[in-house]
Length: 462
Image (tube, rainbow, N blue to C red):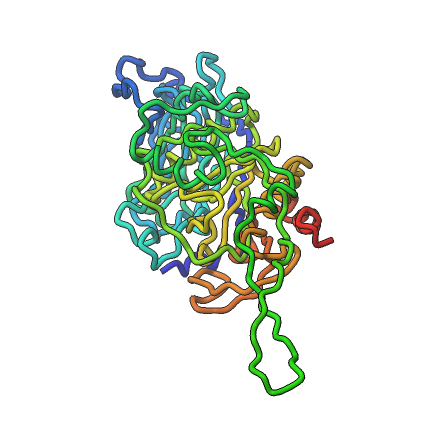
């Protein structure tokens, strides 16, 4: 079903490159339509998505060649005014179909009138998502999709798509407005507030973290290693047989519980803290049996964001994952921004084995951690590596896993391992270890050894 992915060995799951192009703009493209002609926007919803069908290129749109338009392998939209947005991506009807080709966009900063250079949108996004034969992976709402690209506050867009082969049907440009930050957004402020009259979905998303933080909290507070060990209640009970002198029956004797290898709990910003609209996701939560490994990703959204904008980036990705791509919720279990802030991702409880949609074929018994940004050519900040180490030392420790060790996972199908293959993996792996992709970028992947060692130290193993 996804055999076409096998040709994508060298692709990256998050390369977002700015490529300036020296084409001269045709006269027809310099006069955008009137703002009054735009479709009406929602009046009060926290965020929104504009979905624009892509059209065959004509003389009003600059194609990839020296001329304009008239190439059946190209689709696009002339530059135009749109309602404000901050993140974009392209979707199509068939989730199994692949977009083999190039997607480039230009955007205009809100109110500035200045257009960006052409930027590439990463087309290979199949390696993220739910496993094919799960309920989520076979959902009717699923769409094919590119990776999302964060462009910041914008109110103008132009796009061109060229296919190396026939383009998928139903190509649409998705423009996502993340909405405004909640009043108690983190990390902008230092006080948490309890929501008044929460919806059932909001109450459920908060209740699953009730053992770690107060109801409605915007973050789960950090604990020292000592305090984390005290609150840890999943000790394995060991029995040591005695050696009697005679033939008397051997009676198991309960030994004192071993000190757990678990790192100090880091501060984790909850979905409430980054402003997740709980009405968007599917109701209920889906769990796997355990957490045996962590897969590290980069998000495909580029590095052009500030840490104050990270909650907006998360809300945009969340809306794109659910409303545009048709997933049941945010795909990753956790996210980390470039300042090292850790965020709760998919709902269901940060301490629980929540089934995510992050590493195609290896979502069962694993967790996905997305570092916001692109790290093919950029070095990850030290704060990112520290956050990865702290998060994995705690979460893997809850499940008795050595972050500097190895484990076995059974593939659910992908372009590296056939379904049913038992695969030996490091307990902290990069996305590329389970799928033929460049994710999480060469620079971040090369630092995972440091993260493993640091995580093991946090657990007290080294």
